[in-house]
Image (cartoon, rainbow, N blue to C red; front, top):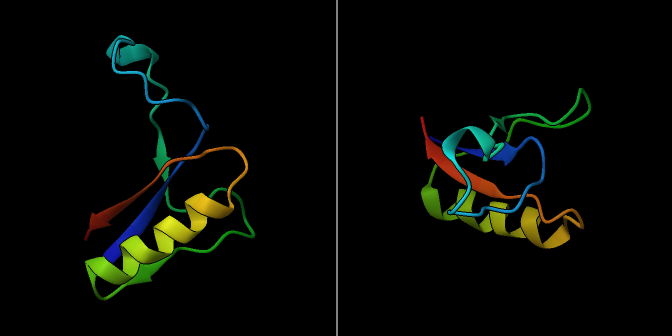
Length: 67
């Protein structure tokens, strides 16, 4: 199974930032109305993560994690 993790605070991924400043907190749900997105294959999960990223005006990062 694969789940989509959502960047809690939309922040640019700047590789030059020190580790403590990256603000890379990943969550399954952004709020109480959000869903936990779980898929049987990595391809399905990545396809949905791509859709979420394309529809997100905040440029939030979405990543797929195997569980």
